[in-house]
Length: 359
Image 1 (tube, rainbow, N blue to C red):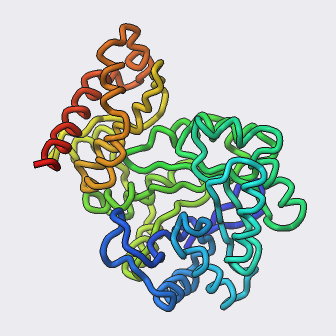
Image 2: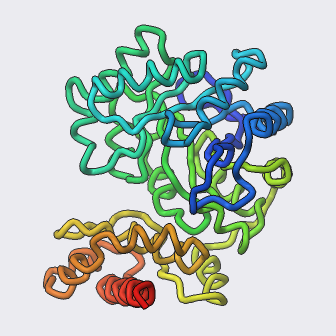
């Protein structure tokens, strides 16, 4: 296992981090059937990864990741706490909520986390998080009190991560990206403001989809080719971890271009060739890149999860799109996508699904 510095924290982290969603116990539709680990099974898997060199474990407050946080706490009690790094987070945006969340996480873990992120910050919560007495202020205070070591922002949105990169309260960032959805990583690579922040990247396998189409060495090398610290991957079995470790050790992997990735996927369906750079902005508020992601995920096998998300407001978005005359999104798209046509295509897909579900 190779290691990288985590920004300016002086922490050395394994290039592969352990995402703990798969070790939760319970049945949720986005996880394969073999993910339903008991405490003993989870502890055994965590220790297996640790012995093979993984030193960063990422979780979230109960119940966001089920009981994974509690299991990670049990694991922390088994070994020398100074030998590994706990990355934790909570979807709390006000200062009071976040302060209480961290105290709860400390109780669940039985120790203090090294990194603590405001989780899934989006446009609706952004100003609250960054404001006076918001979640960032609370984490900064908790850092002073010794309840955590480093403050983080986790978001799927480039503009929010960029704002966090300029904020002196923020030590670490967590974003998303992969071989297909590389647009945000490419923008991070070009922006000097990110150099001082440690960056963790999730969705390396695109919610478990991409290993059916590309080898693990290509998927992991593609993410690690950018100036990030750690690729977070969810593991539910030893075999999965072994594949990732072997892939990470391979050097000189030839990476396919975005066009080659799309070309390979075209053998199975007609993907929307969006790399999720997030430069397109709809004047009516439609998250174009998110719709395109879920459309591709639907055709790649995550149909239950993707359709649930696509059905949230697609009719309104498609109607706005039909009546829009500015076409701002198309002017902003570096790949010159005919975005309105794709929006109508997504609306038709959802309409067919809803119709079939009622038959």
